[in-house]
Image (cartoon, rainbow over all chains, first blue to last red):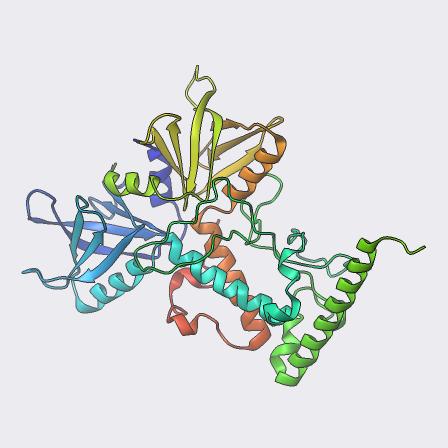
Length: 259
Length: 149
């Protein structure tokens, strides 16, 4: 199977932040000798280099569907990356200190794409609940069309436009997303912001539209909320009222003009 | 570059975020459009001959650009070689847009930015760090301002 190796090598060596980096001993597959390698973790990809200064990684371990565990080994500070499946390989690595081992085990066990997606969805849900109340109170919101538009400094919003999270995309083949071995089950959901400008360059997610009344500064309506719980409740109330009003408008418009 | 092929092949067999038969052209000179089963799983785009169960190849979707080309067509290229484009011709404009949206959100780096953004928003609204409950608030990869593009 072909891989876009040049891009992989670029990803490994470019200056995007590494989630962890350091020397580890890697046990060979056939021969059980350990080799000291420079490891760089970026996202769900664990690259390893012959030397720290090497311009290209020797190899990469794709960290999806694996578990990370401490293991019994003659080697001190050893841990293993284990993949499911009978013929799958187990990578045995050893750190140079207890602290390094713990740090690596921690970051590797959370390195999967699925884990990241889980956390993002959870925060997204929290944010949504904070703005519009629990799902039961405003169940229609999630189905409303619309997505964040990349206008970071745009407090001016027409009243009809209800800011909503992007709709759940239809699945081509109706299959659920594969979950990694940590066993958490979540419905497939790609409702995260589109984060690109017109040239397809990645942009940080745009600030959601803010009510002018809450703050004179775009994007910092929350500042008032953070001051006291009652301020937040008032804000929450106000958002809730606007939502109710907008829903009413929308329902009326749907019914059509009255005779 | 060595990689854990067995595990990647296993990943290719998992239920996809998105899958379809699409015409695809490699960036090689003289390449023509060929019908492929294209499958998005986590941040990998696998492509198969339509009657085979093992993919011909896989693209890791990090530091890539998804660009709308002409009608029904989009391309994937990587930042270090922007002229080298993998081209995809869809059946419809709608399908084309759906794929562009899905692929733009498919990178780990993109999700990281979303996470940092949401974390910051929640922190502003509540004064509390929502990542604390997961025990990951100190991790470098989730800090505001550490991510460079």
